[in-house]
Length: 264
Length: 332
Picture 1 (cartoon, rainbow over the protein chains, first blue to last red):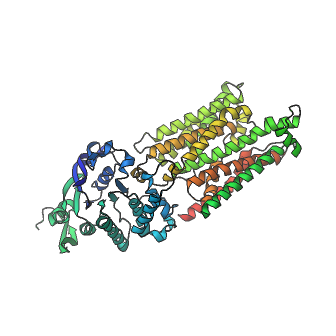
Picture 2: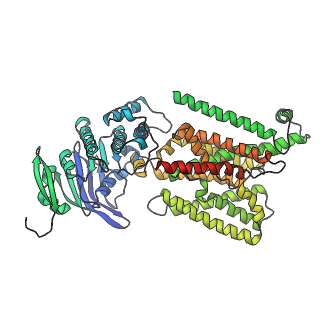
Picture 3: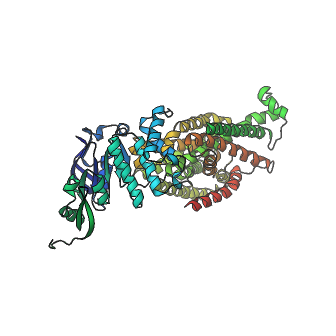
């Protein structure tokens, strides 16, 4: 079953079309990753699915309902979004940040309910930031900070979590931590994950489905093994990749620039 | 629990200081009063007694005015800092001071006999016009009132109105009349003005207190706020309308008082942390404390002459501003 579907979505920015006629389906309970070169429209698509951008044409469906007709506060109970890390809320403590995740459930003047408190603690525990809960974000390392943001998204307690390049600016170890956390959310908590990633090996290892975008068009989509092929990588990234197999999934060993017309 | 007790104590201390300052303000000034006169003017009022009449008709309105205006300017500054994500912002950035000064200049030039009450109302309108221009310019682009556009258009509109009013003032020889307004002072606040404008300040302050939790959200990016299901445009617009009402009225009553809106929210944050549910009440109390104190000093430092209290606030404010700027830059 598909939790999110876009039908002929076009998005234009400053009068230029950045996404053309994109129709994709994102299956429920799986990890779906958008891949593609810089500026291909991954982030634009993520932001459109997350209702942060309005499509100029076409529509986005969440659980078979057009998100355009849904109340944004109701969507916030079904879908949590972690935008690309541009936030500078450095004065906040980790706990204050995670508490924001409960906003969609709170009424105007009410204080935190018992359920809110329980979910906040649970989210901090999942993301292993409980020991940091009283630290200000400005005092944390990049990896800790990203885990705190993910904890906020977890606290929102939604079936779907959308992440835009969650591992940017992190070192190897912290990238892995974040990816393992996302995988765990999918496997143990059965959350549907949609994300954009640059690292193709992470995309291959941690995703079920891949969607490749280039120049605002859908290039190809399907399971990891269907999408990550030598031919597709040439078309999407203009690279000649040496692909091996590890744990039944493709792994890119190394790659070179592919010059069109060259023999294989 | 511990934090809550600490906050209650801070509020109580702030209020006690305010009460003491209010009493001192009524008692001291160009005309010194005995405790008995102060007491009698409240509880056994004798309208034939000159001292008692001074307290009731002149001192009381100015002291209450100082209190309300201090609270209003301080809260407006805090709101502007949240909305623009700029710790150095205050309500002047919305073009309010320049708009009010512009209308005042027009009144002085073309209707020199207009009553103070009416010029005040006109300058509130001027503040509103300038602020709506700033709103509409900064939301013209798709970015929907981005902090940067807001600050830039505020500066542009301020410069525009200031240029016109300076020009008119120069031609009409108004420098003297406007000088006191530019430094600010509460000496002329009357009961009539308070009756007409005071309730709006009180309504504005209450509205801001109800918005505290939404203001906390503004520390996040617009994308994050939207993804939590909240409307940033609405939060910003309501905040800015409160700023226009609160500081538009204050500026019209007492002139362009600098630094209250800038420093008080920061002192409040030092004391109670970053949660606006605590910061806003604290800002209101401290703002009232500072202006009442500054007014008291302004009229006791060199009696019977009055020192414009804007000068006193700036004397305290500038060193603090430098301290703040240095502290901020060391964090980057």
